[in-house]
Image (cartoon, rainbow, N blue to C red; front, side, top):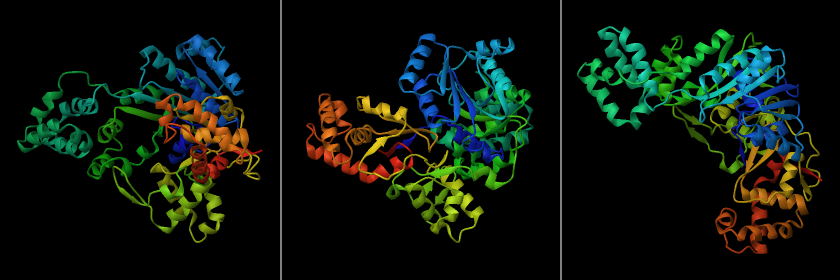
Length: 498
């Protein structure tokens, strides 16, 4: 069971909270739009996971838009709308007083794999400025550089021409400290840098970057969005918001010294050795608070790994995190069983004796390390009163009952996570059998599906350890999945009691 990486409202709000932006209160209505929607199924799953929201997918292909609308209707997801409109066309309609979209709390666009024309990108930024409410979040993913050395080339071309001879020599040392990850992957460039440092010849190194494009889309985006009343609110990859976790230690002093530099983000890109950025911007003026309870108390936090697989330490790029203390052990034990708020943990017997700020700090570390996930809330469904007769929860998930599971992963909507949870085909088949026949008769329900899969050996190999399924095969699959995951399936709202 794996959380999906598609931008969820709760994960975006959590990143904003790290910057002091007051998050939307759980359960309050909101509007969310996905520009250049290429994964309508993912947006449907997100809508099914957040019943209080209205979701809109902008698609340039009218036929694909019609197909997505029909699929949403078949899944009975009634809070998602697909529109055959581009950002440029949407802005034109807004200027005519006929906006195709309501005021938005969230706008998401990903052009990292399919870049937009310049006119569409400008229209996207205009749409964000015109439709996002104050405090609204714009999640924008894009390729910041065209080549692997793009960030280095940009920094050399921006800084080197204005430097004195002594500054240029110091700059070489700063590049070496910043670029540990990049230079480890490019030893020939590292050798040239070391030679230039040893010979006190910075110009010999800089000359390699005189030609070619020296553009940073990160810097261009800052230039475009700040005049439109946006402030940078963080990185969509939560770990990247913590320099001490994401950047090698030798780069920390240089990064910290550059915090007020206008080119701080490209400098950080070079230290992270990244070409693709995942920016979150906040429309100003935004509600701000320093109240920790208001910022983080409204989220639930959960760990989808089984308790036995939660590590006692994490080796991040910038540090080694020890998770063996009693506080981390008690937090992870509770969070693997069921998502919990910070208040839930403090009220739990395991939380006795820990200070609230101590718990907040530990939870943030678990989230930053990618172990815990900020979540929408606790499940308020029918509960677990009858574990012998579990049923798929919600119309989107119920569609699994009439789906032929292949060897591919299956997406289900989680009203607890507030986003998609991805099941292996093996677990999806077990869940389907439980829904159809209950626990007592699940072997009889699963066996025909395994027989169907056995007709395609490559698919069957992803699910079964044997070529021909037997009742024992089905029994073992069910016993393994139920023993490992059924409590979490209930806790995340994937199943409910009949």
